[in-house]
Length: 77
Image 1 (tube, helix red, strand yellow):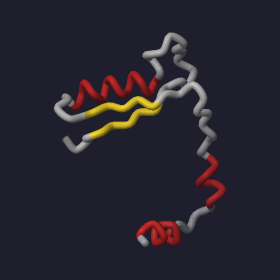
Image 2 (tube, rainbow, N blue to C red; image 1 turned 60 degrees about the vertical axis):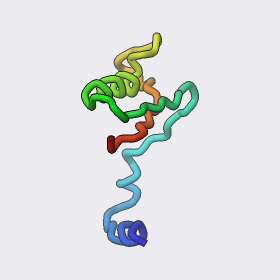
Image 3 (tube, rainbow, N blue to C red; image 1 turned 30 degrees about the vertical axis):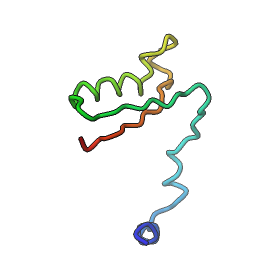
């Protein structure tokens, strides 16, 4: 119900809104799951940022987007 209200409240150009989106090639990407329970926030965030940037892969290059997909469990803890 709330999503319908939010969608109907959008008055802009949908074509322009979707222009910034790009297709993501999921081949070669891994899903990395992090459990945040009992972890220090800054250390966990730095580990996740390394994975998202792809710096943990041997094929890392700063101009390539080779990061993996991260899922954080127990984020409220």
